[in-house]
Length: 302
Image 1: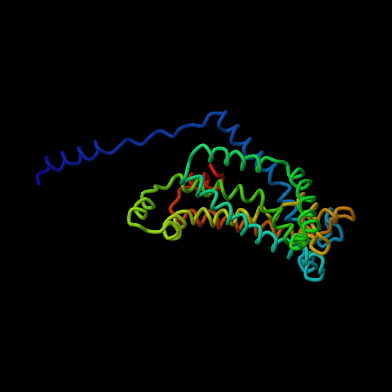
Image 2 (image 1 turned 120 degrees about the horizontal axis):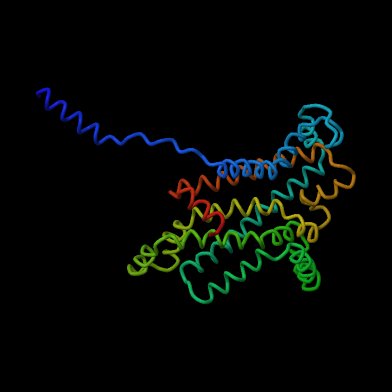
């Protein structure tokens, strides 16, 4: 290869190389909006950060900092009332999540695969359930539970765990329905149609095709329903039965005598549990191949 040919090749390569782009300077408005966004995030999360820090307080009261230590976490092991309240909340949240996932999955599949005028009415009903104030649900549930348990003789509704589980599953069912519906709307129904063309029974098609397609959303809905049921304070305060006091109601009663560090310690543990559940939701959807935008859309039922 001659020198001229080499120079020609080098010139062609250099001509094909894009020139470095000039660094874009951020305007004052962009900087101001960025600072404002950071301040808003700090404002929203500062109370949570404070309660996590004070969970390591060795003082007698939560507001009086005495020193750093793990005494509050060790106190949890010494108080049966706290252990019972946490146990009731976890059991209730698990059962409520199962109820919400079962009903919500079927509702979401029906709305996605059999659209029509009825589905919009049903979606509006779910929206009504979502926006109804909890105090309204609580006031309605209490006499309903009494009617079922005492007047109609269905003694199962006299059990505190059953009451709390049913009450907590109301809002969670709507959330699961949104998530499953959003997931299946973005999935092609050709596989289900092909299964029907091959004379597969509807139950087999549902079990082998529809349910696997919706499974990431079902698991995400279950985890979200679990976390939502942990924090159902108002309904729990109305429908609880003596001996089955959940954690949120226990905290409300503890406020009267002054908050203690062990309250913050348990709250920190439940916060970590919630964050782990949300992380698992994102992980399940990511492993299913969803992008960050699709994950956000599915989790919000959009």
